[in-house]
Image (tube, rainbow, N blue to C red; front, side, top):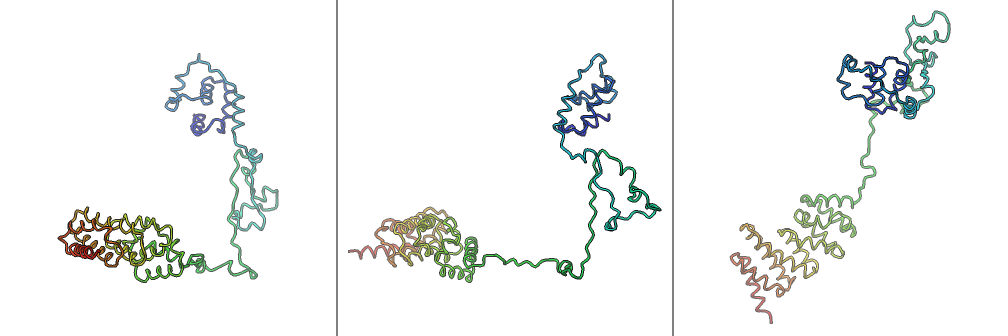
Amino acid sequence: VGFYLLYDIYRNEALPTTPFVPIVLETVEQTKDAVERKFLLQFLTSPPKELPKQTVRDFLASHDPTDVPAIPDLDAFRRMHQEGAPEVSSRSAMGIRPTIRDSSDEAFWARPPAEDSWPAEEGGAAEALALTFEELTLLPYEPAWSRPVPPTLEATADELFWLNVPHILCEPMWDYTMCADTSLGSEVRELIAKAVKAPLPQAQQQVIFSGLEQDAKLVYHCGLTPRKLPDLVENNPAIAIEVLLKLMSSSQITGYFSVLVNMEMSLHSMEVVNRLTTAVDLPTEFVHLYISNCISSCENIKDKYMQNRLVRLVCVFLTSLIRNKIINVQDLFIEVQAFCIEFSRIREAASLFRLLKTLEHQQP
């Protein structure tokens, strides 16, 4: 039973790292009991699966006296165990204790022994240290190192007071603004990130306008990408207009124009395009493509209320472009005229149609 318990404790480890292999090998060589030798030889090779379910009597009853197991090369098992066993220091292998009690006056933090344990008169070293017989024995297992709690040092007069700061002042006062980027560019980037998500108050919009005015190159580092432009147009169209005007001389403006043309038509998007057309000369193909997209959006919408609302917005937008001579009406005459006829029931579309006819008669 004892040998089986040792096996069960280390059954998940490899045989070379099992510490009781030498004892098993020595017992196999010395025992004269055939049942015990067979039992131990199974541990060195492979125990049967039904062994954990058997009692001692069951195992003895299953033993066949005529079945004499062959003893393998035990020296091979010893070499395998020696090669796989972890290396230990010579002192640890001998089992010598690494510490003894310190009876000097400097060891004032150690627990003093009972008064009756000290010898009445000076004797040997063992009596002076009050060592027991067990502590002087070379034990087979190395004990843990003794780690007494060190004493609290008392501050002297020549020491600085900060070594003993009162508890009320122990928590440091951190300056969280240290090393923080407080530049105008950092503030503009933070506000642009907020402007993409929600409308900004007028004061914060003015900070962005002022920052873009002071640093012309800040628009390239403000964090606005073409993918974020539709959200900025819907939440803060004034900021979108200012940023696009600053990007007009850049080679990146084509990407922003492409996103603006293909985004869903709305009042804010038309406001942005209308402001851009009055401030700078936009590419003609961009303006024509945007107008075609607006007309197509009005024709495809199913909700009658929303359709009438968008048609009115588009008609007002086209009237503004025509009267300000932003576009040449002859380039889009057929498409715009068909749009006005389709929605002639709406007053703004009828007014735009009359404007087209007036311009047509004025042509030489």
